[in-house]
Amino acid sequence: MRKESIYIKDLLGHIAYAKVLKEADEIDTTKFQFLKSELLSEELPKQRLGRLVEIINNDHVVYKFNGLKIFIYGKPGTGKTSLVQTLAAATKKHLYSVSASNIISSRLGETQKNIDKLFEEIKEAHYGSIILVDEFDSLLGSRDREINDEYYRMIGTFNKNLDKLPKGSIVIAISNKPSFIDDSTLRRFNLKIEMNEISLDDLVKTFVCRAKDFNFEVDENLINKIAQLKYDDLNYSLVENVISIALLEEKSIEGAFAKFLNLSLDDLKNKKFTLREIEKVSGISRSTLQRKRKDGE
Image 1 (cartoon, helix red, strand yellow):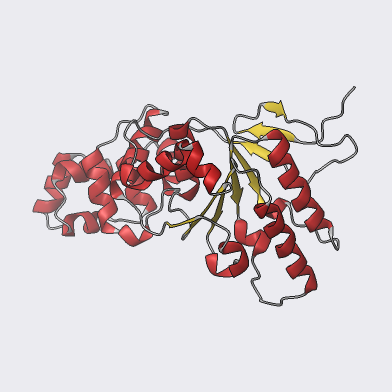
Image 2: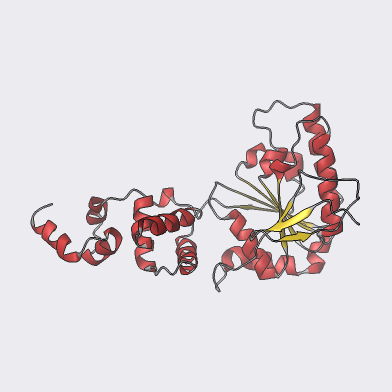
């Protein structure tokens, strides 16, 4: 009976076996994960995705690029992984992810072997899909800049495999620390996309979409208004935290959002939120708020 060497795991925990490289080669450190490619909303953020979708769907362009290699970088929580998931959905391609940190080995020469096996698996089992390399800086980054022969061999192995990818391949690498990536590797990426800004419209859409999964109603205008008070503290990943607060403390989404951002009643009053809005955020009745206002509280 054939022995499976690598498994693909989707986000729901179902197992789907990949094509085997060699029965003798087990790659415990390089496990692919199948990501759900679902649109966050029916309206794609066209300014971000439109041209990318056209490029990926154009087989001639991808072939001419000798394989499309995209590098997406920016601060944490700006939606880099979500962008790739939405991109896969828009192009109707399977999306597989491998964490670069799982390829690293403390044994001399083992990381290079893992890189070789990873790319061989991409060629044989996942050709025609989008391959996402997460935590890219943890694989090819040097945080302390103590460059040695082993580091250069690792970079050389990765670059060689990147150059030898089949012409129809699509590889996307994401990183929070682009300055840690070796220049020789960055030059091999056809497209580089910086993501450091949060779109309030996209954040609100994410709130609405995720809240529906838990039967919460969302006041989009109020969420937007709250978000503007602490724009510099925003990231897309906070939505899950807010949902958790709303569930655990039986708060509205708006109230949970305000709590997550540490906004007080005074903050809302000073920014001229209406009594109706403050009632929805705080859970305090409008009559009580009016009485407090009269009493000068």
